[in-house]
Amino acid sequence: MYAARNKDEEGLFAITGEGRAVALFRMVLAFMLMVMLAFVVVEGWRIWRDYRHAFANAENMVTNLARATAQHAEDAIRQVDAITAALSERLEGDGFDHIDRPRLHALLVQQKNIMPQLHGLFVYDAEGNWVVTDQAAIPPKANNADRDYFIYHRTHSDRGVHIGSVVRSRSTDDLIIPISRRLEHADGSFAGVLLGTIKVDWFVHYYGNFKIDERGALVLAMRDGTILVRRPFVEKVVGRSLANSEIFRNHLPYAAEGLVEAVAVVDGTPRLYAYRALSSYPLVVEAGLSRESIVAPWRHDAIKSMAVLLLLLLGLAAFGGVVLRQLRERIFIERALHQAHQTLKSLALTDSLTGLGNRRRLDAVFEPELRRARRQGYPLTLVMLDLDYFKAYNDRYGHPAGDQCLRRFGEVLQQALKRPADLAVRYGGEEFTLLLPDTDARGAELLVQEVQQLLRRQILEHAGSPLGRVSCSAGIATGDPAREEVTAERLMAAADGALYQAKRQGRDRYCVAENSRASADS
Image: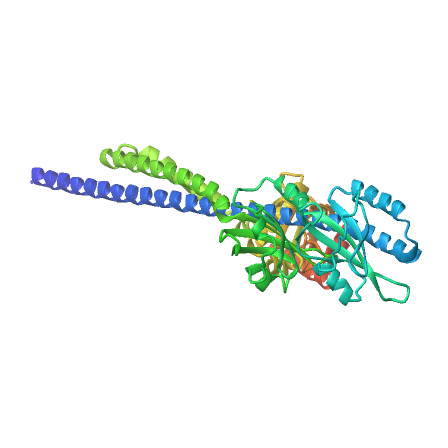
């Protein structure tokens, strides 16, 4: 009987041991699958983040290119505009019957030498005949009455500068951009045309200095879409119209500048474009990077990362097979589980966008900090901060730009906090919270002032804000747990109320809860 009982116990022990082994097998297998999935998810997120970063960097690049080329074109044309304005006033003031041609010729030569973009300066009479120019000699019977700019001024009384389409110079055979003004007699009748011409080649050389990909493009066009200059330069493209392009048809009529992903009508290349209309002249610049040049480096890195990830997963699977076969790596598995637990816990308490703590982190430390302040007899301050007009910022610039703005503000908070005990968290959306142990209301005011000053120095453009830049409002609440009843809920409510008071007073400011001021004064 004893032997039978012993045998039954041994069988039960064997069954229990097998069940534990099966349970351990399933647990390890599930853990391995979870880890593999986590690697895939994390790496997938990183690849997607790098993809967005690649386009964000490209957006910054084309925006800067568009601004640089627009400023360059505007400065070049403004110089010609200024000299032609001065010359027309002088010609009309002296009278066309009293032109000192040698002296005027010398002046035109001097101005051409000063401005490298100039191809030439010309004065034509009412019939289109050449009166004086910067050139050494006037060709016999030279007449420009058939030019579009001459016809325009003869039929329009507009005295402003006129920018025409690209033409080929009859004197040098160069491609030029005509910039002209109407000349009038004292009675207001048409007296001729004053013309300054800019070399197309001068723009081509300037655009050639930019480091962009081979399929990238820089374009200077008239407001009606007529191409004046383009890189890469192909002469037959000059004069073509972009009026039916995505930018000119669907974006330029509604916004003077912007970012557009579109297929070029000239060469059919998909590009990311930044466009910008000149403020003083009816011209538009476009700067484009080919989509392939943006995606190719990211794709190369993504393929390498996926190859490494695949090798990692294969190695992990092989290692897991050894563990499952031998069941002798329990300590290693327990340590891995513990480490994974710690990592997940850290991730659960950290905001992935800004790197600050999150709301869970605040909830976890708030009550311990209150108890510590009560024991040690020091004040505890809570600051609620909110980015002003942030919804308008997201609507205007897009969520990727909004995310970048939140990261920059997180960096500002980290820069402003000097003590290890101070805690900055992203409370939710565009709201942030500072928990400041051993800090009174005055100390918190100084810290908030520093945060707002650091944010102003970032000069984050915000066209949707009355200030034209990103700003923040703050509410400050201070409690003294050693002398009064202070709870996390009350302190949070007081800081939140002060924040909304700052919002109501006009934003870009802070307010201190009234009980906080009284506590500080006492």
